[in-house]
Image (cartoon, rainbow over all chains, first blue to last red; front, side):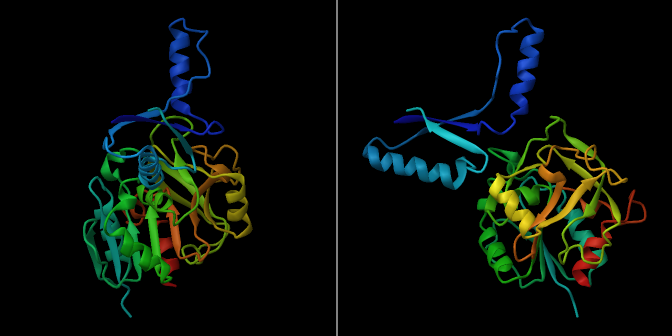
Length: 79
Length: 226
Protein backbone atom coordinates (compact mmCIF):
# COMPACT_ATOMS: atom_id res chain seq x y z
CA UNK A 1 0.00 0.00 0.00
CA UNK A 2 1.32 3.42 -0.95
CA UNK A 3 1.12 6.12 1.71
CA UNK A 4 1.85 9.82 1.73
CA UNK A 5 3.23 11.62 4.75
CA UNK A 6 2.93 15.38 4.82
CA UNK A 7 5.56 17.12 6.95
CA UNK A 8 5.46 20.80 7.72
CA UNK A 9 7.06 23.31 10.04
CA UNK A 10 4.90 24.07 13.07
CA UNK A 11 2.70 27.10 12.65
CA UNK A 12 4.56 29.31 15.11
CA UNK A 13 7.83 28.83 13.21
CA UNK A 14 8.70 31.28 10.47
CA UNK A 15 8.87 29.51 7.12
CA UNK A 16 11.01 31.80 4.94
CA UNK A 17 10.64 29.79 1.72
CA UNK A 18 6.88 30.26 1.80
CA UNK A 19 7.34 33.99 2.31
CA UNK A 20 9.63 34.20 -0.71
CA UNK A 21 7.24 32.20 -2.87
CA UNK A 22 4.46 34.54 -1.77
CA UNK A 23 6.49 37.56 -2.86
CA UNK A 24 7.25 36.02 -6.24
CA UNK A 25 3.62 35.13 -6.82
CA UNK A 26 2.57 38.66 -5.85
CA UNK A 27 5.06 40.03 -8.39
CA UNK A 28 3.35 37.88 -11.02
CA UNK A 29 0.00 39.35 -10.10
CA UNK A 30 -1.23 36.65 -7.71
CA UNK A 31 -1.81 39.12 -4.91
CA UNK A 32 -4.77 37.17 -3.50
CA UNK A 33 -2.65 34.12 -2.68
CA UNK A 34 -1.38 34.69 0.84
CA UNK A 35 -0.05 32.91 3.93
CA UNK A 36 2.00 30.53 1.83
CA UNK A 37 3.96 27.85 3.65
CA UNK A 38 6.03 25.14 2.04
CA UNK A 39 6.32 21.63 3.47
CA UNK A 40 7.47 18.27 2.22
CA UNK A 41 5.74 15.14 1.09
CA UNK A 42 7.16 11.66 1.51
CA UNK A 43 5.64 8.74 -0.38
CA UNK A 44 6.36 5.18 0.62
CA UNK A 45 5.14 1.61 0.26
CA UNK A 46 3.91 -0.27 3.35
CA UNK A 47 3.41 -4.06 3.22
CA UNK A 48 -0.20 -4.88 2.27
CA UNK A 49 -0.50 -7.65 4.86
CA UNK A 50 -0.19 -5.30 7.84
CA UNK A 51 -3.23 -4.62 9.97
CA UNK A 52 -4.22 -0.99 10.23
CA UNK A 53 -2.91 -0.76 13.78
CA UNK A 54 0.47 -2.28 12.83
CA UNK A 55 0.73 0.04 9.87
CA UNK A 56 0.05 3.09 12.04
CA UNK A 57 2.65 1.96 14.56
CA UNK A 58 5.24 1.41 11.86
CA UNK A 59 4.68 4.84 10.31
CA UNK A 60 4.64 6.58 13.67
CA UNK A 61 7.90 4.92 14.65
CA UNK A 62 9.61 5.88 11.35
CA UNK A 63 8.39 9.47 11.70
CA UNK A 64 9.59 9.81 15.27
CA UNK A 65 12.94 8.11 14.65
CA UNK A 66 13.95 9.85 11.44
CA UNK A 67 11.41 11.46 9.14
CA UNK A 68 10.15 14.21 11.45
CA UNK A 69 11.89 16.46 13.97
CA UNK A 70 9.05 17.11 16.38
CA UNK A 71 10.80 20.10 17.92
CA UNK A 72 10.07 22.07 14.77
CA UNK A 73 7.82 19.93 12.58
CA UNK A 74 4.45 18.17 12.58
CA UNK A 75 3.20 15.45 10.28
CA UNK A 76 0.04 14.01 8.91
CA UNK A 77 -0.47 10.67 7.14
CA UNK A 78 -2.56 11.36 4.05
CA UNK A 79 -3.32 7.72 3.19
CA UNK B 1 50.30 14.31 29.11
CA UNK B 2 49.02 13.73 25.62
CA UNK B 3 45.60 14.97 24.64
CA UNK B 4 43.89 12.54 22.30
CA UNK B 5 41.13 13.51 19.95
CA UNK B 6 39.10 12.22 17.03
CA UNK B 7 37.26 13.75 14.08
CA UNK B 8 34.32 11.91 12.53
CA UNK B 9 33.86 12.04 8.76
CA UNK B 10 30.43 11.54 7.21
CA UNK B 11 29.74 11.45 3.47
CA UNK B 12 29.49 15.16 2.67
CA UNK B 13 31.63 16.43 5.55
CA UNK B 14 33.95 19.10 4.17
CA UNK B 15 35.59 20.61 7.24
CA UNK B 16 36.94 17.33 8.60
CA UNK B 17 40.47 17.92 7.33
CA UNK B 18 40.50 21.45 8.76
CA UNK B 19 39.31 20.07 12.10
CA UNK B 20 42.10 17.48 12.06
CA UNK B 21 44.85 20.06 11.39
CA UNK B 22 43.29 22.39 14.00
CA UNK B 23 43.66 19.64 16.58
CA UNK B 24 47.06 18.46 15.33
CA UNK B 25 48.49 21.96 15.47
CA UNK B 26 46.98 23.00 18.80
CA UNK B 27 47.03 19.81 20.89
CA UNK B 28 49.73 17.31 21.71
CA UNK B 29 47.91 14.68 19.61
CA UNK B 30 47.27 12.05 18.37
CA UNK B 31 44.23 12.92 16.24
CA UNK B 32 42.26 9.95 14.89
CA UNK B 33 40.26 10.21 11.68
CA UNK B 34 37.13 8.12 12.02
CA UNK B 35 34.73 7.11 9.23
CA UNK B 36 31.07 7.21 10.24
CA UNK B 37 30.52 3.50 9.50
CA UNK B 38 33.05 2.43 12.10
CA UNK B 39 31.51 1.02 15.25
CA UNK B 40 34.12 1.84 17.85
CA UNK B 41 35.69 5.09 18.81
CA UNK B 42 39.24 5.05 20.17
CA UNK B 43 39.66 6.19 23.76
CA UNK B 44 40.01 9.97 23.30
CA UNK B 45 39.53 13.16 25.31
CA UNK B 46 37.68 15.12 22.62
CA UNK B 47 35.56 14.21 19.61
CA UNK B 48 34.72 16.75 16.90
CA UNK B 49 31.75 16.36 14.58
CA UNK B 50 32.90 18.62 11.72
CA UNK B 51 31.10 20.99 9.41
CA UNK B 52 29.87 20.22 5.94
CA UNK B 53 26.77 18.81 4.32
CA UNK B 54 26.54 15.30 5.73
CA UNK B 55 24.37 13.10 3.53
CA UNK B 56 23.74 16.11 1.31
CA UNK B 57 21.62 17.76 4.04
CA UNK B 58 18.84 15.47 2.76
CA UNK B 59 15.63 15.39 4.82
CA UNK B 60 17.04 17.84 7.41
CA UNK B 61 20.60 19.00 8.09
CA UNK B 62 22.23 16.39 10.29
CA UNK B 63 19.22 14.05 10.38
CA UNK B 64 20.81 11.07 8.63
CA UNK B 65 24.25 11.53 10.20
CA UNK B 66 22.65 11.43 13.65
CA UNK B 67 21.71 7.78 12.95
CA UNK B 68 25.18 6.69 11.79
CA UNK B 69 26.84 3.62 13.28
CA UNK B 70 29.58 5.57 15.06
CA UNK B 71 27.09 7.81 16.87
CA UNK B 72 26.30 5.12 19.49
CA UNK B 73 29.91 5.28 20.61
CA UNK B 74 30.00 9.06 20.35
CA UNK B 75 27.03 9.18 22.76
CA UNK B 76 28.80 6.79 25.16
CA UNK B 77 31.91 8.98 24.96
CA UNK B 78 29.85 12.06 25.85
CA UNK B 79 27.95 10.28 28.62
CA UNK B 80 31.26 9.41 30.26
CA UNK B 81 31.84 13.17 30.64
CA UNK B 82 34.50 13.57 27.94
CA UNK B 83 34.43 16.47 25.50
CA UNK B 84 32.33 16.49 22.37
CA UNK B 85 32.16 19.44 20.02
CA UNK B 86 29.94 19.86 16.96
CA UNK B 87 30.87 22.63 14.58
CA UNK B 88 28.24 23.95 12.14
CA UNK B 89 26.80 20.76 10.58
CA UNK B 90 28.21 19.03 13.67
CA UNK B 91 25.99 21.29 15.84
CA UNK B 92 23.01 20.34 13.68
CA UNK B 93 23.89 16.66 14.14
CA UNK B 94 24.11 17.09 17.94
CA UNK B 95 20.59 18.56 18.08
CA UNK B 96 19.29 15.78 15.83
CA UNK B 97 20.85 13.16 18.13
CA UNK B 98 19.16 14.94 21.03
CA UNK B 99 22.40 15.59 22.93
CA UNK B 100 21.75 19.32 22.69
CA UNK B 101 18.48 21.24 22.95
CA UNK B 102 16.64 22.90 20.09
CA UNK B 103 17.03 22.83 16.32
CA UNK B 104 18.75 24.88 13.62
CA UNK B 105 16.30 26.38 11.15
CA UNK B 106 16.97 28.02 7.82
CA UNK B 107 18.56 31.47 8.22
CA UNK B 108 15.80 34.05 8.50
CA UNK B 109 17.28 36.11 5.64
CA UNK B 110 17.19 33.02 3.40
CA UNK B 111 20.80 33.53 2.36
CA UNK B 112 23.67 31.15 2.81
CA UNK B 113 26.01 33.10 5.10
CA UNK B 114 29.71 32.84 4.35
CA UNK B 115 31.58 35.60 6.18
CA UNK B 116 33.37 36.46 9.40
CA UNK B 117 31.12 37.07 12.38
CA UNK B 118 31.72 38.31 15.88
CA UNK B 119 30.85 36.27 18.94
CA UNK B 120 31.43 36.60 22.64
CA UNK B 121 31.23 34.36 25.63
CA UNK B 122 28.00 34.34 27.59
CA UNK B 123 27.90 31.48 30.10
CA UNK B 124 31.18 29.98 31.26
CA UNK B 125 32.15 26.40 30.52
CA UNK B 126 35.26 24.38 29.74
CA UNK B 127 35.17 25.46 26.09
CA UNK B 128 35.43 29.18 26.86
CA UNK B 129 36.84 29.51 30.35
CA UNK B 130 40.16 31.04 29.23
CA UNK B 131 38.30 33.72 27.29
CA UNK B 132 37.50 36.98 29.08
CA UNK B 133 33.92 38.26 29.13
CA UNK B 134 35.01 41.36 27.19
CA UNK B 135 36.82 39.50 24.42
CA UNK B 136 35.13 39.62 21.03
CA UNK B 137 36.08 36.69 18.85
CA UNK B 138 36.13 37.03 15.07
CA UNK B 139 35.28 33.65 13.58
CA UNK B 140 33.93 32.70 10.12
CA UNK B 141 30.44 31.29 9.61
CA UNK B 142 29.36 29.29 6.58
CA UNK B 143 25.82 28.04 6.93
CA UNK B 144 22.33 28.01 5.52
CA UNK B 145 20.63 26.57 8.60
CA UNK B 146 22.04 28.37 11.62
CA UNK B 147 18.93 29.96 13.02
CA UNK B 148 18.73 28.47 16.50
CA UNK B 149 15.21 27.71 17.65
CA UNK B 150 13.67 26.08 20.70
CA UNK B 151 10.37 26.38 22.57
CA UNK B 152 9.92 28.74 25.53
CA UNK B 153 10.41 26.09 28.22
CA UNK B 154 13.64 24.94 26.60
CA UNK B 155 14.89 28.51 26.31
CA UNK B 156 14.17 29.02 30.00
CA UNK B 157 16.13 25.85 30.70
CA UNK B 158 19.07 27.17 28.63
CA UNK B 159 19.00 30.49 30.48
CA UNK B 160 18.41 29.10 33.99
CA UNK B 161 21.17 26.52 33.64
CA UNK B 162 23.56 28.95 31.91
CA UNK B 163 24.02 26.81 28.84
CA UNK B 164 24.52 29.56 26.24
CA UNK B 165 28.24 29.35 25.52
CA UNK B 166 28.56 31.97 22.76
CA UNK B 167 26.32 34.68 21.32
CA UNK B 168 26.65 36.78 18.17
CA UNK B 169 27.70 40.37 18.72
CA UNK B 170 28.64 43.17 16.34
CA UNK B 171 31.96 44.03 17.87
CA UNK B 172 30.43 46.92 19.81
CA UNK B 173 28.16 44.93 22.15
CA UNK B 174 25.00 46.04 20.41
CA UNK B 175 23.28 42.70 20.05
CA UNK B 176 20.23 43.82 18.09
CA UNK B 177 21.92 44.28 14.74
CA UNK B 178 24.42 41.51 15.24
CA UNK B 179 21.99 38.64 14.88
CA UNK B 180 23.08 37.31 11.52
CA UNK B 181 20.66 34.43 11.10
CA UNK B 182 17.65 35.02 13.35
CA UNK B 183 18.81 32.83 16.25
CA UNK B 184 16.87 33.11 19.49
CA UNK B 185 18.80 35.21 22.01
CA UNK B 186 21.61 35.62 19.44
CA UNK B 187 22.70 32.09 20.21
CA UNK B 188 25.82 30.98 18.34
CA UNK B 189 26.66 28.05 20.57
CA UNK B 190 25.18 26.06 23.46
CA UNK B 191 26.23 23.28 25.80
CA UNK B 192 24.44 20.45 27.53
CA UNK B 193 23.77 20.58 31.28
CA UNK B 194 27.00 18.80 32.15
CA UNK B 195 28.76 21.34 29.91
CA UNK B 196 30.98 18.75 28.25
CA UNK B 197 29.21 19.01 24.87
CA UNK B 198 29.41 22.17 22.75
CA UNK B 199 27.50 22.93 19.56
CA UNK B 200 28.80 25.97 17.69
CA UNK B 201 27.74 27.43 14.33
CA UNK B 202 30.93 29.49 13.64
CA UNK B 203 34.08 27.64 12.53
CA UNK B 204 37.01 28.06 14.97
CA UNK B 205 39.04 25.60 12.85
CA UNK B 206 39.08 28.24 10.10
CA UNK B 207 40.55 30.89 12.38
CA UNK B 208 43.74 29.79 14.07
CA UNK B 209 46.66 30.18 11.63
CA UNK B 210 48.66 33.36 10.98
CA UNK B 211 47.43 33.31 7.39
CA UNK B 212 43.78 33.12 8.51
CA UNK B 213 41.88 36.38 8.93
CA UNK B 214 41.81 35.77 12.68
CA UNK B 215 43.47 33.46 15.18
CA UNK B 216 40.65 33.62 17.74
CA UNK B 217 39.66 30.01 17.10
CA UNK B 218 42.73 28.99 19.11
CA UNK B 219 41.06 30.23 22.28
CA UNK B 220 38.54 27.39 22.35
CA UNK B 221 41.19 24.66 22.27
CA UNK B 222 43.30 26.63 24.76
CA UNK B 223 40.29 26.71 27.10
CA UNK B 224 39.73 22.96 26.80
CA UNK B 225 43.40 22.29 27.53
CA UNK B 226 43.61 24.71 30.45
